[in-house]
Image 1 (cartoon, rainbow, N blue to C red):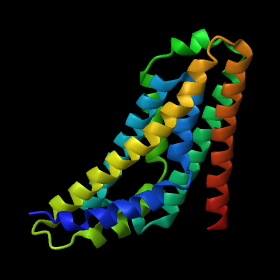
Image 2 (tube, helix red, strand yellow; image 1 turned 45 degrees about the vertical axis):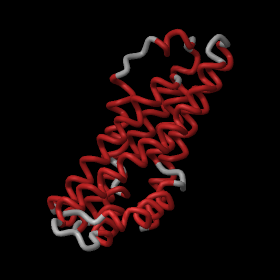
Image 3 (tube, one colour; image 1 turned 180 degrees about the vertical axis):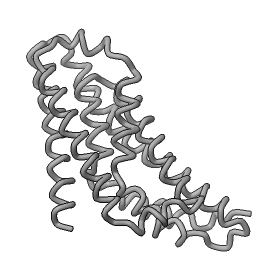
Image 4 (tube, rainbow, N blue to C red; image 1 turned 90 degrees about the vertical axis):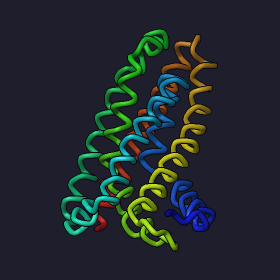
Length: 207
């Protein structure tokens, strides 16, 4: 019912899309730097949840309707930039706190933040809309084929960005005992949020 022959080419396209840094990758890295490997894992699971929403929207046709209103997508981008700015503020404000406080943070926070960051990144939707239909191949059930492709996309990003985030979290774990190093990592995480917010705003202004 599905065509598996398209998967090698599809995975190659996914990797080309995922390798350049974007809000999702930046958030997972920042989460790892701020609170360690566990936080990075919860963050990427949140990102994966948001991606799943967009993939489902494309499969059922909602995504195409949203794509017809570019101003709506710009509004979503600006909302995402505002959220990244808020994360930058919160992270930098808390940079003076000890790493022990960070370790006690709830696992729910990075997950929910990941969902929000993902859902306010409509580039995912813009990727899913034109790309997924190109890989239907000889599938007898188009909806099932699109669902399979969407699931593979989500799993690929979760594995790739999750690995990057956990690697970043290793630095936080290594320097956890140093208050100064912990603060520096928090400042780095805040800088990542701030930089990505600026990139998103610049993209919207550039049209």
